[in-house]
Image (cartoon, rainbow over all chains, first blue to last red; front, side):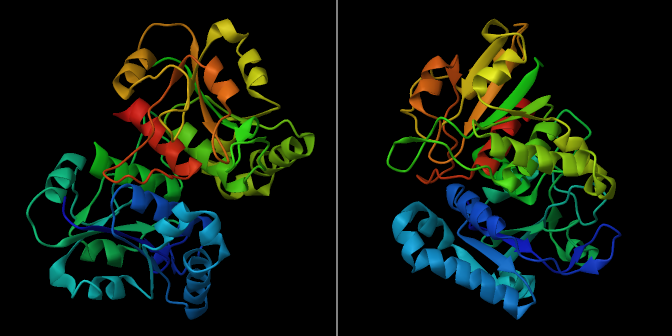
Length: 186
Length: 186
């Protein structure tokens, strides 16, 4: 499997009315996505926020588990949170791999009309197992999803996750878990 | 597909030391599991707690979305939370289907030695699509997992969810999402 990383994006994302906003970080997102990333072999989980106070908050949460008493109490949580990287934006995550040429970016969206180049699950799994040297970075949006600007810049868009019903309003915690399972374990 | 329901169990569950305890309800569990249940066609999501104040809390949260202003603001959340049933224990969930003879109970566990009759994913998917008239009720444990007494009474135990790593400490929100996806959408 190629190197795999995920990012949880808090800006630019859409609000309910379709405006570009910055969402607030949810503590449980940091825990859940780090545990899912660790389970499925994603080497890094980028938490992105342009707001310094939000980045400081995430760093404090992670530090509490990596270096503090909580990590001693529950070592498995420490192990998961060690994969968290706190960055201002997706560009900074990409730069950590040496630049855009070294990264294949896939976006996720609940809507099939979110933009970008559609990539079905079989194709995505095949790409993840190809000998392409680039890191695969999968973006997850908070609030009402990733802004069109991010979708347009991506290399592929994974399908919406649906079951047998027309309902497709999973939490980002559920959607990330299923996405990683479908990409890695199927 | 047969009728499918899920339950999130707050008692009897294990703590880190293996003692039987009652865990506290987490608000986000109620939201996330109801959304996952709705997506994958599970008709009911039972939140079980033997503590009346905890059941009242869950009923208040659900009421806020089903009948209050939040449900008007986000109708998709109202739709998901309408599937929540607040009960004291698994027995009460089972009784709502007319008794134990009408229900096939599957447990979930992160450990392969949790007890009960092992059921692999292919067998579980086949059973879910069989003409057995019983409802399938899948139990998810909070804290450090379902107590042995629940495992022993179940009809089957689903495999632990693992990826390519040895790490298997998913959140119950992630584990429930993946379990429903693997049972229903694979």
